[in-house]
Image 1 (cartoon, helix red, strand yellow):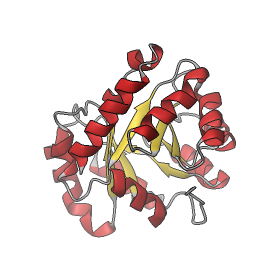
Image 2: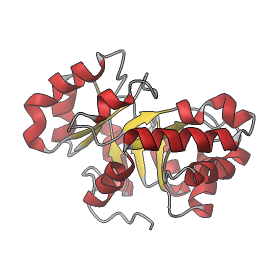
Image 3: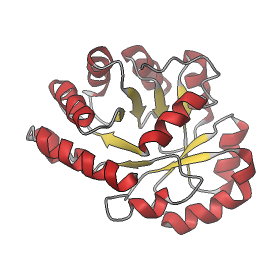
Length: 222
């Protein structure tokens, strides 16, 4: 099933939240070569995961998103580390369904809204959470999760805003050992992590190991 965006992109659709809640894991992928995009996506799907965030940290990001969107339309495909309005446009045109950023930039949120893209800005403080809510962002990226205080910090931050319906995707320093501490929090829709899609595994083409790690992560999250 392919995600079809109808609501305002600054407001996360119920369908998207449901898909994140179903898997509870968003693999944060860095691709150096677009040739790896399709085999990586297949490895994740073989492991049972149909959500991917491809970060705009490399020159291969846009083409990688384009290839995954074309070959695997059933994947909920996101573009991460969107720091410039041009990147938002590129990600949307390539086929990304949603975008994320490490911080909160109203200009980026506005651009995402203008092109019809769901967007989750990064937050770390009460002021940033409120600013993101004011922009209509109900799904927010808590980053850098562990450096900012981990599950205890997120729990404390989320308390005053639980009635707003805000949900968080903590990312940064999360791994197989600590993921459960975040997932037990009601305000967490999913966690973002890269241990199952380690850059070295991708570069070496170890798709079987990526599939194994993905299956293991999903089992731990269930």
